[in-house]
Length: 258
Image (tube, rainbow, N blue to C red):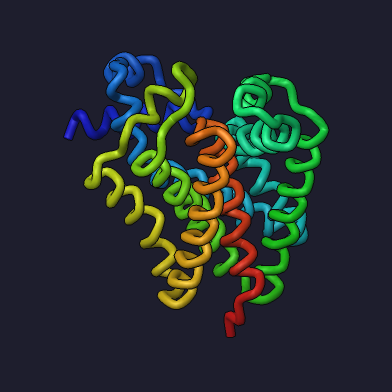
């Protein structure tokens, strides 16, 4: 149990900007295998990020209009994660859009600067996310919007983490290398459960449609990653998470809730 708590706190430290108190950080310590073991907690951390975003959105709703409250909730999740996944989306779009050979793609992806393709992708993704959440609130109500927000953060990360179980990490070294070892079946099932249960609580039919959409997206992304670079990188996981989150909001915004 103590080890599992260490792995969870390692996931919190790796996947968010939440600082651990010094005494707690000293107790957790660090070992290379912690990061791989922490990968299964990625969707659970996502649910916590989603809960924080939902809390900020709900509180802001008391003072400002729904569109403003939604933006503030989005800003809270960006602050909590340090735009970790959005950065992966921008890097991937820059790399896949600007590189032709595998080596060129990986080199551009490794560059910390954001190019035109990446900047455009970020603007479009954030605007689309905002408008889709506004649309969900219009078609449903505040409670369903907040539930979708939380569930999407967990389910999108669950989809992204499945690449650790089926695909190869293509860099010899990299920030994601310690995390990107093959995910064992038990860990994968736990991660998938963290992503699926909140969707089921919203609606089993909605959950089934979302799972089908995410499965199709995963198949398309996986095939594309293999064709272009032979596998995935940490940035690819960020891109997968962002596209999965947007896909869930697209389904929710089109759903007939009543």
